[in-house]
Image 1: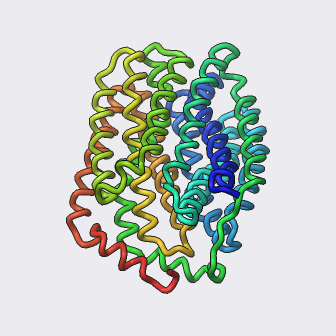
Image 2: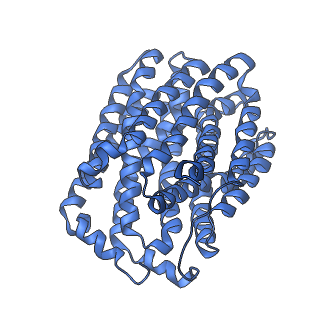
Length: 395
């Protein structure tokens, strides 16, 4: 079997899962508004997902490392996604939406991290670039945003469950055909987790990038409402996401040409600065049409930030704990940062409007970039420190 053939199910899984992710990120706030929730209540619902992720990401990462299988962990989570989403979208009262939302996100949030962790490890096994695999998730996101946006404009956001279940079912079919990761080591034990808990460079890095990830997650949650606030509709929201994620796919695809040029922290600092500039521009926009081409910056900022951060974390975490370490990063990116971004964003957009929201998150991104520069100068941020951390008994 050729490399491309062995990676095809993984690429399809990433494509289909991120296609479902488009629907949640782009249209769930609009759907909740349709259900009668206000901005603050929408912020609560969106914060439930990150809160569930704080527990579900490390749990499923540990289970994956414990039983040395990413494939079957993914299959269980996708089955849970299909069942829980069917119930979640039937809820009408806020309490019921919050409860079923927590169950839904418990199964949903680890899938992206597990898929990317499997992609990273398969890329290492086959000596191919991680970005060339990961870009298929971005392509799925872009295609879904374009198609689903037009569909929902025609049939109404009330029916968003149907395209969601379609892509989710396709992801499950692809998951059964995955080639699992091979780990030549004894199964992980609970005591091994201390290797991560005692990893100071890892946690210092996570704390700093949280400032950038808060700004990213706030935008994910409220870009749709901001476009609606400026007078846009579902089609414009879909176009904005399409431009953003299409450029993200290009960044991943071209990673072999640019990624090795500098230390990953340099790319993360660059992305953080560009995040801040991007959000300050968003704050000044008064026509939703302008946000569509500006969303090209989403691909550059997120694509650069995510790829560099994922690679840097892979340097810091022992191989036996790769799934756990990657999902701890996801817990911060989609968990803690998502809670803060959703709650602050919901309150700001409700009380002061989207312009104030984007000016605030622009300040968060700028703060994270400055702290990263300091981290890079200090010993913890040096490449030699990362190599020293990795040279433990697990490698």
